[in-house]
Length: 528
Image (cartoon, rainbow, N blue to C red; front, side, top):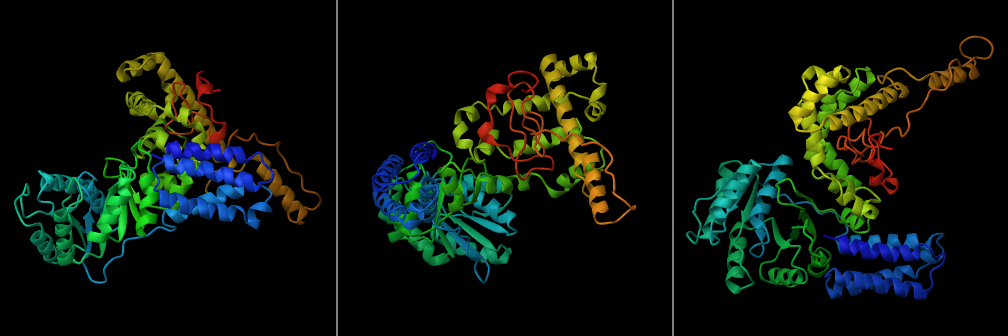
């Protein structure tokens, strides 16, 4: 959503990096370009004015004029001001001292309130709560049925005593839901209210009546991030008519300009608490202003990437993999498949790589990443017998033909996968031997030599000078990362290589330097 804004800001900062000193004219020109970029992104004019004034005032300060790299100081100022506009710090849900905590959703029709209710219920369940979704939208056709389906997918309970479709009193349903939650031991109640196609008195009155009977601890205003400037007008109307304590942005994965995200917080004064980035129930998380600002400026969002990896790769799986490396059991195709499936669960590979620093400079290359390569690799490995997955060396020519026929791929594809896997397996073995840590396999000759030298210097061991035996061990190239196309489970074995490692993933995978990544260099089977 913020791709256009990111591109414009990147061009502005690129022009500054060549200057050793910034004059007032340079600062004014930079501020003008930033203003144009924000206005083109549909950011509200009052927000743009406040932002530019703050940036110009700080840019003329002593910190920038005396800095060794003024351009970096300006980027730092813009980043900090973006964080301020987006809310400054992450705001969490305020839980009631006495259960249940009541959360009311309000907003226009089509903003995604009903789907958001399911996402919020699923997220609350992951946090250890027992949420109850309340179907208080009795006007929109099939709204009650939709909430019931979404609740079932999220694995949470729903309170829907009325069929909806214009039948029933939503205020009474909301009032009864609180007593029902207390009886059934639900500690959080999420009330889904009706929306309209526009702001009108009837909508505001009904939402205000529901607010009065349930006395919500949090009233979340759900706004479509794609509606642009109108998001500010709608937010102001709801704030005056109903009032809300937080904002939820939906459809952040869209291709609109995204100015609403930068405007609503500043205009209403209420924090953005959650963000929905897709249609799946898992595409939902707490809104972090500093991470969003970092992504807008092309600095990546490694923290979110690590959190996603931690959710996908459990501690037991990582510990088992570390144990196999330490014991020299070897890295098998079964392990390769297991990690690749876990990576697939994290979402599109291009989105994951987009969270890494420097990914903004490789947008065209990231667009060429094809997630179907993972499916092809999975098909090849699953066409092997259990014995072949454990010991790939037994896969001879006839077996390769059988595997190719079973997976719908060619023998060349099978050969390429096995060659790249052999490289990864060799690298894993080298890394396990070079760790030199307790429980991580034997030390290399070089490390043993250094240890003996240190003992001799301290006067320990035999009399005289200690001699370090053994020549220097060969260090694996790229450690702790893996060779391109070999270490990362999402690597294309057919030439469309991927980076050698990712942060927060199982042992043996490190953080690549994306600025040096060139997707065109992996066209040959050797990945060089």
